[in-house]
Image (cartoon, rainbow over all chains, first blue to last red):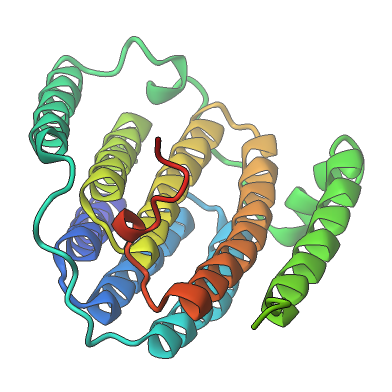
Length: 172
Length: 100
């Protein structure tokens, strides 16, 4: 019962935030809508006992990534109005058609139940609590290669962003 | 408990909103935020499936996706800033040198 109430509230929060991201004219409002979505998804993780992932979501996404987004928005400036006229006139109509079709598809699947997805029907009620210990054990045994690759990826991306920030045009 | 299918339905809706926004908006920053929306939808699906199948590996995968997304944001925003420094615009419509 508690889970159902939290689920409905946070689903509305996540989808509302996502709608704000797409519809807001001002990028700052888009960023705040994304923040709401990220927090709502983090609460949905907690309800599903994925505590560590929820904490990482709040710290990394809502903390670091959103701060970075807001910094760049401030750097670029928010007073520029987005171009209204469309250079690809057919694109918006096609996108709306596809969106409506996907919504109809998802609605049909929801009404008909989720029997076609093995994981969507509860076979084995989840008792696995996503504590740090429970996640760390597979991460440092079966996934250890991926973990090391992650370290390499983070180093490369940090070096790459610094190189991009220091780049100057030779003739300028 | 809430059926995991409902979590997947919410994730599907999130993914659709993100994809539509990516195709409709022209501001590079907002397009980037829409990509983050889609990544979050996938993470939500993974956590729901992992809980239904009682498998902790799904959450490990979500952890790695978060790390890769953070690295992607760092590099992507650096590219947007360096484009803006040369062009004074963040609209993708005005970056058309490579079009034929």
